[in-house]
Length: 183
Image (cartoon, rainbow, N blue to C red; front, side, top):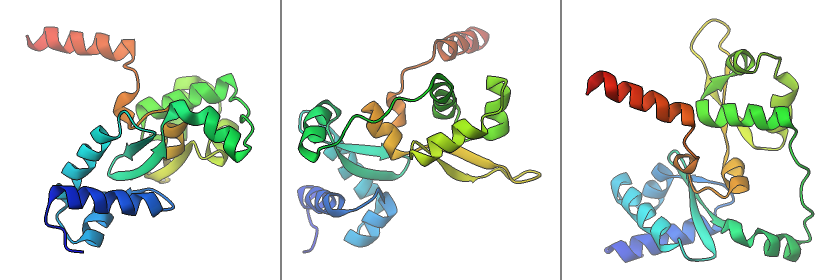
């Protein structure tokens, strides 16, 4: 199939994402379909808009995308698949997860500094549940691991991308202070 229209490109991307067992990069899509990454980017953005009122969503984390079930359908999907509600995260785990989500990429020592306590066991829990992942190494002494959130994190919160995280009040205050300095 040769791709000659925007609609054909969207159809091809949709089909690939439907069968992909894991998130796919925009570069992989472009190479597979044999088109430019910019074209894929535009088609992915349009697909995300198309899915807004449907039972599936296009989820994005950086340059990786995947199709997911709309978060409001979770109870039905759980029932169909016979899945029980997973156990809740502890307060320290939620605290650590929030730090990673808003400050990513971030090292364990930076997390420890913010929390004021050792975060090793909490990080292991979040890693084992697939909510956070290693996203690289810091180019400094010891090359500490950098952590970031995963597609599972976005899925659990019903987000399509990290930009949908609520703004922190602190960020809003800092932005207004910066504006005052430059205004």
